[in-house]
Length: 213
Image (cartoon, rainbow, N blue to C red; front, side, top):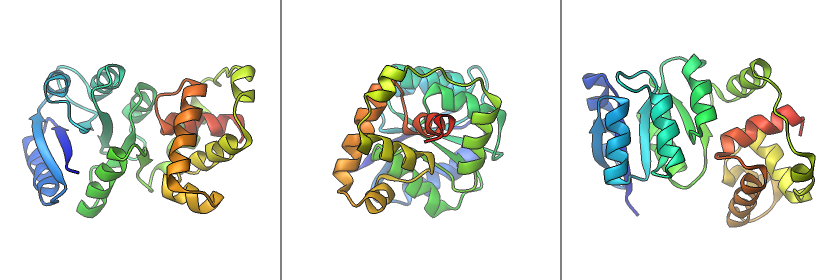
């Protein structure tokens, strides 16, 4: 299956480089390019890509606001590009429901794999920022008030999966850790996100950290 990607980046040279990398993969198709956040949302509505590769600092409408709209409308999964490993915008993108975070200086092969991972419905954070992002977010934002009844509704297996999400594990990694089929892991992730009223597995990872799971 071909993964349809929309690239949103205001710097023409950087955007051209990203497009070049993406087009080098036979399973990825670049369906559109946006130079600002407003264009990103507009094109996402028109093209319905599988993944939007979204820069955070863009004119007219920043990447965080654009991500919020794209996610809220269910237009695509969003993979956020950030220059710094703890860019302040990343936290806003996390709250907005971004499915993944990637540094701009990431190697080409890792960029392609990140797009594939997000397209499979598995959120991801670049290895260099996973633990720092989760720890920083949990430590600098007000504690989430979780509904005990909702948490109690989680099965033992779902709690185990949630704990694995806190470590930034992929579905494949969780499957190995818990000795279960990858398809079963995906089902557990989907169910626990619904029960906890979260929009992404990255948000689930942060919540798990806050709950000490």
